[in-house]
Length: 387
View 1 (cartoon, helix red, strand yellow):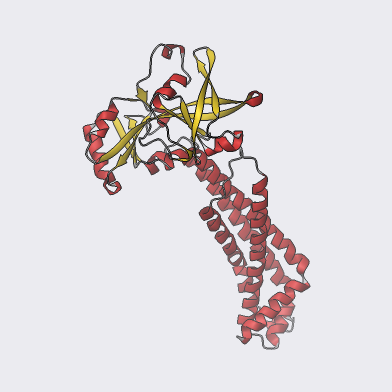
View 2 (cartoon, one colour; view 1 turned 180 degrees about the vertical axis):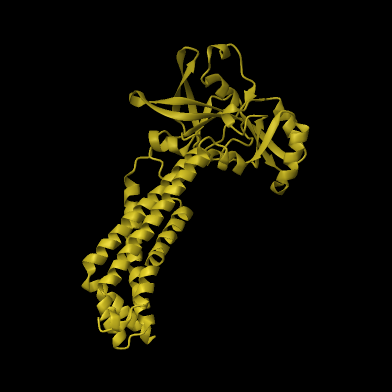
């Protein structure tokens, strides 16, 4: 206890006497914290933009067309496959998911690009609403809108929404009623608008060749199981009983979203290098600190201070400065996050942010290990040039 009290006294006394120097390194750590947290939030935001709709599906499996390489845009399944899938033992429900892109026309001729998703009401693929009601029938001129659409446009339940869609060489405009609002359901880095399947087929962009016929294809089929624990067994049954399909679980489907894995790997590498830079900066600062006070440490040891006191004082300093810097950086991150427009994909996930903060708190002690070891090994006579 005496050693701890003495170490605390020495550590805080030096911080107060050299507060400018310690404040500077604390601010450097705050900037590193700010950078790490924003890289983590950007990775979470971009990841959500790609995977959010798929990750929240009320389903355990996605069925793709054979040889589509688990790419939703490349997959085309005939709608009659649905009836075959629903007859497979262990399948509780199956719903088509058809995708395209279009634009919502806003007042002032502003345009919001959205993902247009066609689903079967009441089946897997239709997200639950947080306001309003679910879709009614396959032919209803109704839509569910993503919370992101609400944030960017101010639209609400009961309003009408105007979609601009290319039909051959002409632009057509379709007015549909908003009956429900979903939580975040971004798909392909765009807010989502969910329609009944046949309404989707009527308003989706079409080429000249598609104008005279209805499409009876869907991109993928979402499958909900009676028992999620039987996912491998039911997957095998589907493969054997339904021809021309590939089966993927949700994590596999997310990993095969174009660009998702490469994007996340890049951002994680950037975050790792930022943490490494933090270790080097903190380690270099405290190493210089120790080199500048070698005589003082020599005097302390000459009058009887134990190595434990010297080491503990250095560790306390490193911990205090690192905690101060991380706290300031986290607070600045919070303030800056309030100023970003909704179009910037920044999402501060609690788990990811907590992991980043813990990593940042550890870089101080890790970076200061060398300086602590050097301080402990200082010989009093050599430090005072008496050897």
